[in-house]
Image (cartoon, rainbow, N blue to C red; front, side):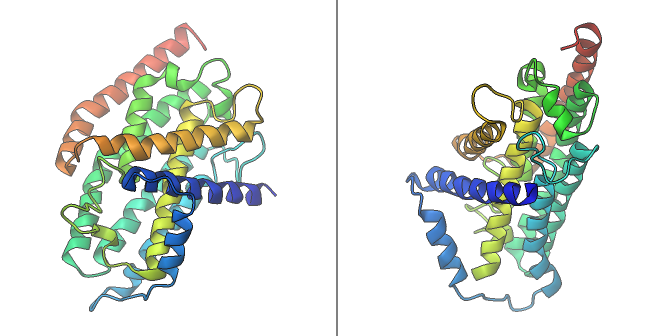
Length: 299
């Protein structure tokens, strides 16, 4: 029963994220636009590149969708409302998101085209940049909870949310999340201005529909992870726990989709330099501060 409810919530969340993304891109708020776009893609002819690596080309979108679904599996909507409450849930989430890189490399290599390949290798640069920025803030969150279980991480925030307790870790995690989902201003793998779609340029019809659905699942998963790690998950007054998780997740997703579009696009080498020279230093400082606070003033 929990699996059905979580998947239903995921479907609704993906649809709402698609609505917000359409609003952010086109400036028009339309509840029907995602459904119309999906039907248009499913009815469109599927065109194959001339000399593709067929295995990579077909597997890329599916693997991206699987990575997103695996990430969602360890995010709790409410007490007991989770697909699988692993003792190492936070670590599992990080491991599942690693397959986003594999999917994008496959999608870049598979079509045997210049734009797609450049987009795939750009994401490799992003991965090197965000890899430490996503795991080190999770480490600090787990330190406070004294557990890698996502459910225990939520419960550890009963007195104070981690967004207040660990603001540096929160900022670093959100920057890393933008890189994982290749959202503006770190949307180089698709780079509409110079790559004409990049990794998704050669996908059409149902394949493109699966690709875009998978990306929506990734955005929802990262928003849910942000809520779980930093905004107290289901904790909140008056409303049921699942409602708080849903509201917070939609709010975080909307912020991620809109705020970055007002910033200039960040090149992968610049992202890498800032992440390693400044981001890792701040992440280490965050871990140290959380450890000291945990010893001196347990909250």
